[in-house]
Length: 247
Image 1 (cartoon, one colour):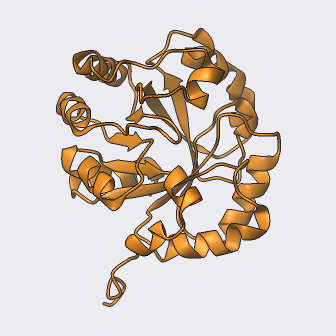
Image 2 (image 1 turned 30 degrees about the horizontal axis):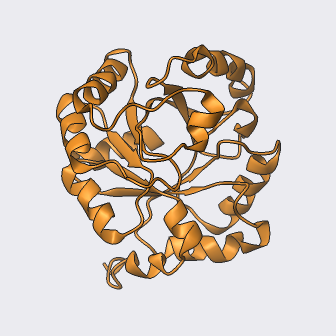
């Protein structure tokens, strides 16, 4: 089964999906085994790998190491073409539809084709929407685009729907790493109401309550990054039920 079909099936059955985003520049390679063992014991269903500004070859090396210790799908969440590696299972082919910088709407994608054609990666077209969260994010700085105002929910929802009508298979609402304000429930609810494709929500989610709020509001897949990086005890709150694997 493809990664995208898995997400579709989970959406249809109301299964909650959780991805942990690992930034190659923020994890020490010899700590990967320990970190992944905690993920394997948690309710995590996917691993995303990527960052806004990552050194060449780091992503490839990290994905190889992650694959040694888990069977969870590893999906690239690239900030640049240099982060493409054939070692992953799939790639979110992100178009920053909240901005108007042509490089991040189509330019980087054209640049990526020669790399993608030499891989067997599953490519998942994803409309990426950056929403203002209270501080400047790395995505904003590097892409040279402004986030959408979190107060203009109609515009956010219409942008998401436009992405779907353009052929995107996923919509990703992003508050940014270390966001002061995560995507609020009103935004999630109104975007969800517009879409027939799966909705991903990430950025600024630091507690189990915030995670639950995102799911209840309509997120099909929630992404957590900084919360795990800064506080590994968060894993304890997200452990799988002990009888989950009992037949």
